[in-house]
Image (cartoon, rainbow, N blue to C red):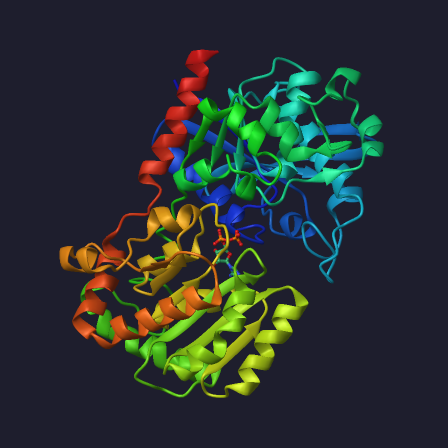
Length: 482
Ligand code: ADP
């Protein structure tokens, strides 16, 4: 029997993306389809989404969805079914999904994503005629209240729900004044309901209500039991330990295939690594870097504390002095952006920086860089190291979360066994990162060893095969337990 799953996400490629969640939500329907799961994606109708819907039609109307007029639009995302919440008062505006053009959060984010979750709960509980689902699968805080609505105020029969944590650092915390607007019964205002430190915790509410909790790597699933990574919800995770699963993200091997990537000047495979040289030369030209014998490091990242970008800034002079070069693409904290722009002007020809978001350039960096730096303080899964592995752009990563699970450190034994796929380091400190950079420079100078590391990475399988099955198995187990 086909299992019908409603995947509730605030972003999904190719329609709207600010980070890894979009990649995962975009790929999941295809990943589970082979396992007899029919997944429908539910997205908010941001301007960018509404503008790119193609053939779509309205199938339902809410005269008042938490006070807002709204329609449900049915369309396609890739080849898979899509539902979109068209609530112009909440989502039709210029700027990003969560904030305005200056990066400031929208003041009504609480109401926006509460309405999104209310609609999701209506859909999942069969209140919209013609649409039936067996499982509600909610991603991150933006979809967090879905579980609470299903638990305390279902519009019909509530199905089992799953809450997936893509990043515990973003919890969706809103003031108590929002509570009366949600239409939830008083009993929901409880420590094991939606209440969180005197306000409402969207992610917390989702975790409390979910039949199962997943996060995006086994190591992160363990880490979030500790206060350092659990960020206030570690106690809840410890209580629910038996229902917490770590399922590592896959990558979309169609979009991210170095042999056929239209963004690359010179496509290549593990057998034709020599062709990467042309991509590297193109990158050097694009970033105004001097060619050199040392490795070309790349960074594709949000420029934030989580990503360890302040630590990278501390060692950038060391990197430039070691014979290496750096090409960076990122945006985020204004102080970090300014810091990296300053570093580029201090090291002309050695450090090149692009502030912004550029999908094509992110592919060119993976296809031409020698090594990708990912010095995250915490990393639930991480995707850029997976793209690096697939593209022979050797990941240099902090030993945390999904980075620890997906990269095999080039220690002597792993190199001898031909298993090494990257470089790992422990504490995210300037000293440890500088040492990792030095190790990378040394390994890169040994061409045979380096190419073996590149090839081992390119051969490792981070397609969705195994993870798609893991999600499908989880859906099945919940239906059996019901
Ligand atoms: P997170 O979701 O925490 O930002 P991930 O590594 O899981 O980190 O996913 C980041 C995704 O966003 C990757 O697909 C990466 O290539 C992409 N990305 C990050 N910054 C940029 C940027 N400035 N331009 C283009 N793509 C970017």
